[in-house]
Figure 1 (cartoon, rainbow, N blue to C red):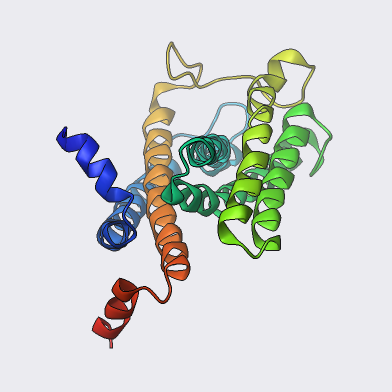
Figure 2 (tube, rainbow, N blue to C red; figure 1 turned 30 degrees about the vertical axis):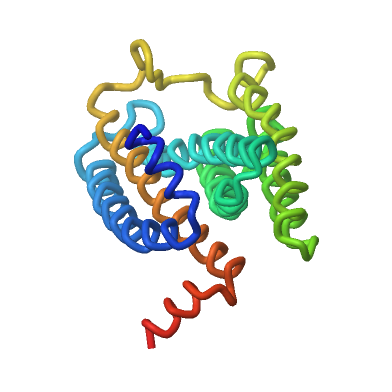
Length: 249
């Protein structure tokens, strides 16, 4: 068997995943904190004030990575849910449900920082702007997935029902992404491009890249930690879990 395929096959084993998550979650957390600390320091002390917005633009370094993560995590949750529904892989069910609280937290941060940024720019904390409104709907979808998963006692049935909602909800993501293009919007248009030239000053980009990478690493750590905890709850009573609990005493 191909070594990569063998590794994925082994990763689906609950004891193997527990050891994997226990080893790599702290590493991802630590790397994420270090990278975000560098990005925060650079954003506050190295980047010059914006010529129009002054220092208030610096909230961008929290708002933009959080907004990107809110979309990325939902897409990943839907992907895991689809794999779980098609191939009945329990680990993917666990990973999909572990994504939901993390994605909801990033969405709350996005909405909060957007409101803080909008107050001096727009003169109001909230406006029913297409981008803001669709991001709020995304938060409700996250909460719906979390609520549905916790409303059903059978963990596998709960994960399948909540995963189906995530798959249906993924249709909202392109609406959020292109809302500033399709409708008249107070929200500024796209200024940062992964492919092509960005309209931001080049000196402002390195801290943003660091924050984007740091949030990704932090997400990996959170995902592994949450999935590990859910995996242990589901496997409670199994011999390997009992041996693990005895080894920690």
